[in-house]
Image (cartoon, rainbow, N blue to C red; front, side):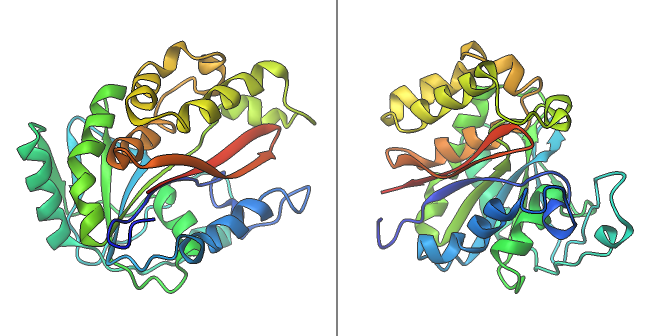
Length: 269
């Protein structure tokens, strides 16, 4: 890994507040929780800020949360009462928001700013495990509602200079996100379920040009419609892959939970 250029990361954020409640079987989310807790030590990085693109924020144009002290948005439903009392008081990064807006506008993207919205559960739930101290400034950046895969790759490319400025670019989503199928909790994944996971694992390790081309055309992949009836949980991966440039991708986490394969990826020199 480069001594000066940080990696980029795609992390799975689980199901709602899953890491902070009881499940059956009891170990459903333990492996993912352990990977998240060990993420920063494993990367051996101390970022000055986290730039997070979550599956749970879509806007007409790429939008930045500019709050100095963002609250939390408990955007999950039907979970135990204590999960709506979780805290993670990380500071915001309004100065970084200005830097990011300049990069995006220089790349031809329209941008907007939001100083009201809380950090959604795609941010605070996994990062409560990644950095329980909540002492690293966090800037959330939205997806664009048109869900154009190429645009999200190009967004990542515009963000790439931040890697050399101490910013860890994190995509928070799921490599497989079909809620009805996950609720069925099949004992083992069906071959059709595994098809997209196998394609994605192969695509991530390709050289940059081939990887980006594959991700741009992801809807043609085997099992794509089954794995992602909607694109929002996959597109954070496009952003971090775009920001990775020539850095190679690797799967550093994989498990089967709720009957589907779920993975985490790191792009590093």
